[in-house]
Image 1 (cartoon, rainbow, N blue to C red):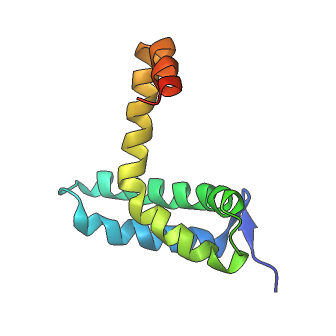
Image 2: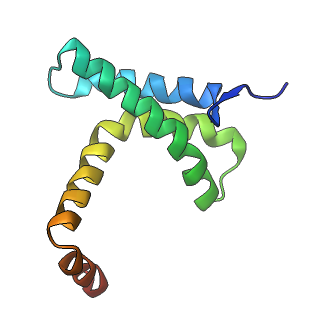
Image 3: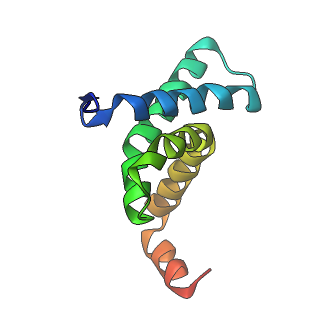
Length: 105
């Protein structure tokens, strides 16, 4: 039976990412209901779109994708703020960031 998809997202992957994001809520600071809902949605989206990328670059079997999605959803509460921080640093000093990256700092 083929996986059902919406916007290129497999349903099973989205559910696994959603579950990981829900589990991660107990490990972060208290959030308002709206913040928690947005955090879970973000976690599910990171997992849904990030899982195929991770699986491709690590040459992992398709059977492992739901596990990857769960852990991406779980870790997304830390992944997304980190990516935003990198973007802010790049915005302030793009050439300096590139130089530091080349120098291995």
